[in-house]
Length: 494
Image 1: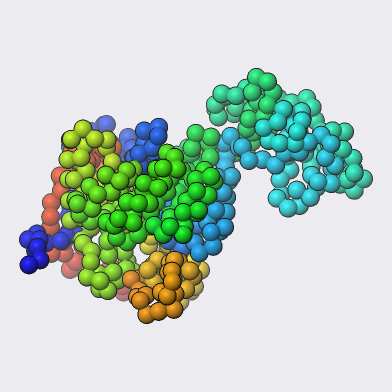
Image 2 (image 1 turned 135 degrees about the horizontal axis):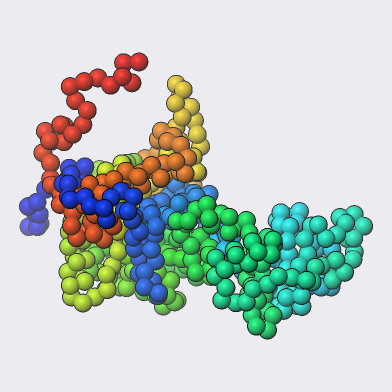
């Protein structure tokens, strides 16, 4: 007969964090939310804010990814039906910023001025390096800007006749802070980084450094570019997409599946590892056996959660899933045993069942390193969903990746006869969520509450929370006492 698990599945909302001794070290202003996202070739890819926006069309696009990365989190660009659109979003995030740029359009000295004008009209750039061969990694000869020529009379003149050749440059190996100091000292807004032989290696813009100062917690790669992830499927037909995403310098890949305990996911992990050292996050899982299976395949982090998203109906449709607290407890215990056996620490991502900073805190206290959220980010101004108004209140469109709407948008790759068959059934719904405002207000407010929670627990970091947190399962009556009761709020009377 079937194996019946005797324990009862529990939700994050059933637990409360017991207070610990708060000291100066764990005072709110000293609490760090720095955490590990996944293993990488350099050790670990880390986040300054432990928030990941879900790989959903209604949640994560390049606009959301740029905003969240600036605030210390990271986004996962979803598997779009149009492969080019996914590539473009990753590229937009990587080129957005704000550090050592290596993808600038470059001209040679013999190109006519009209080509610079055409590029300015198309791309909006105003500054272009000039190299001996017209390639970015050629020998730097000068720079030409929109202020160096007459747009009417100079169209056919060679760039060499108008470019500036007296340049301030920095040698390869210069840090962003050193570049900033040099630009301030020389009054320049553009600093080429060159090798000892004079070959152009990268470029730093002062406006990018100002951005860096404004968002000191931004998640950046070693070149100063914003960090971004992308989702992929286990379908062999999509393997070219995996290769292209790696070529676009995506920082990590996420295998997109509601149930990650499959041989198909194992094959995909091994394929990605065959291509190189790009980190791969696997899942979703809710049991120790599934965790161990994906770790054997080489996963660099594991997503935990099934059937608990705000609009997910997987448990109703397929009777599969688990309460998020129970899932985390079992998988974290498996992770800790994995580490105790002398194997590397594997970050865990809590995905689903998170509707408030309190839920986030409980997930982290139970052992998650980061949290992946959909509904939370879908409510923000920066999400892709349209805003609609009803009775004076603003709402944003939100749909699950397993919904009919996502399928209509081409979300799933349904090969063969499935495209026109009755084999498909929805595992999610579409609807509306209240508009909560800009992510630049929402995330800092949540982080403030999260830091206060850690401080009350006597913890100054997420790692210490893992080791020192005391949690208690609450009865329904105790949970009722913790909510507003025996009174009517003013907002309900007005």
